[in-house]
Image (cartoon, rainbow, N blue to C red; front, side):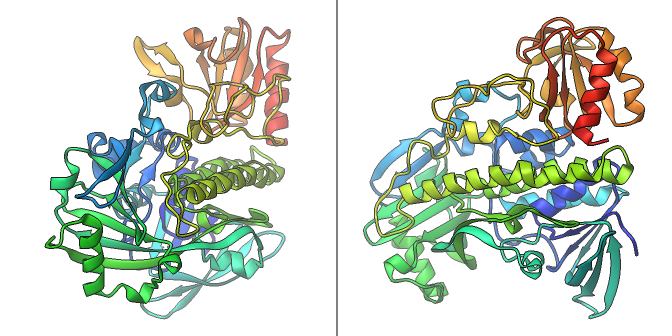
Length: 520
C-alpha cells in the first residue's frame, strides 16, 4: 500500500502526529508494536504550551477529563517520610497568577496511561488516519523518492510492505529507526537509574491536606518519590539513583517493594498492592540530526532527557507540531521540500537546551549521586522554557528587532510577536465575544492585520496556502504592530513574519513573505 506519511510509534508523540496530520488533511499510517496504549503512568505533566496545541485541535477537554483536577496538585513537597517530617513545601511557579496570565490555557496533570487512550480515540476518528497496533517495523530502506517499509503483524506473523514519501520515527528512546540509520546521540548516557512502581494504596490521610503532584522522600538511605495519579488509591512510587544506594532492579521483588513503600510512607502497616514495576535509566543526550533524508526523528527517538521538570513528552509533541504542517505543505504542493530542512534547524536547538536544563534539575536534586537535594529555584518554574522558545531558520523572516531581554531565560518570559517567537496571547473581540488569539491560530496560517488592506492582499494567496485573516484590533500592542501593520503566524503558532507598520504595497509584501517562508 502507499501512504503519504508512515508514523512509527504509538505513544503520545506518534498519536499526536496522527491527529495533527489529519487536521492538515494528510493521510497517515501509524504502527505500534505493542498491543495497545501504555499500561504504566510514565509521563504525567502536560505544560500549558502543549495544552494550547491540544486546545486548538479540540482535544483539551477530554485530556482534562481524564487527568487530575488542578486542586489535587497544588504543591511540591519534600519530606523525610510521607507521614513524617516535612522538609519543604513549594507552589510551582507555573501555577502563580502572574505566570498564568500569559495564556488562557493551564497546564494539566494526566498520567500517560490515561492520556494515550484519549489521543488514540481522536486519532482513530479521522478518516485520514489508520492505526495498527501489534504491528512492528521490521525493516526499511529509503531512496530519493520515499521509504519502503516492511511491517510485521506480531499476532499472525505475516509481513506486508508499505511505501511512504515520508516517515516520522516516534519509536522511543531505544528507537529502532534511529539505530538502523546509525544516528549518533550527543550528550550523556545513563546518568542515573530508577524504578517506577505503580501501587494501589490509600495515601489520603497524609496527602489530602497538602495536595501535591510530587512528594519527594529525602533520607540518607533512600531517595524516592510518591507521584499523584488519581489522588485517591492509585499512585506512582519512584526510586532513584539505585546504584548509589546499593540497589538494582532485581531487588524489587513484591515483598521488598511493599516494604520499601511502607518505609518511605512511614506507615509500617500500610495496605499496599503492587500493580507493576518498570526499571529505566535516565540519559541526557540528543540526536546529532533530526532529519535523515525522508525520515524524521521526533520525541524520545530524537532527544532523551531526565524527567525532572516534565519536559520529555512536551518537547516530543511540540516536535511533531512543528513538523506536521511542513509535511502537509510539501505533500500538498504549497511548500517546497526545502521547508522540511527547517525542522532540524528549529527543533534540535530547543531539544539541546531543554535536555541541558532537565539534567541541571537532576543534578540539583542529587539524582547523580548519594547527596541530598531540594531542587534549584528553576525547577517547575521554567516559564521561559515553556513559552520562550524562539526559532531561527529560513521559515522565519527577521524584522530587525532584538529578542526580548530577560534576566533568566529558563524562568522568565516576555511575550513577543517578534518573528520566531510563539504568537502571544491577547484578548480580542470577535463576533461580539471575547476570544484569545491562541484560539484563532494553530491549524492554518493566520494573518493578524491592523488595517483593511491586508484582507485584499491575502485573498489571492489563500488559494496557494491555507491562510486566514483576523483583525488584530485591541491586540495590536501585544503584537507590536501600528496601523497598517500585520503579523503572519504559522500553523504551529509561531510568528513567521511581521510588518510593524504601514507598507506601501501590502499585496507584494505579503506575497514575498509567504513565498520566502515556504521556499516557493
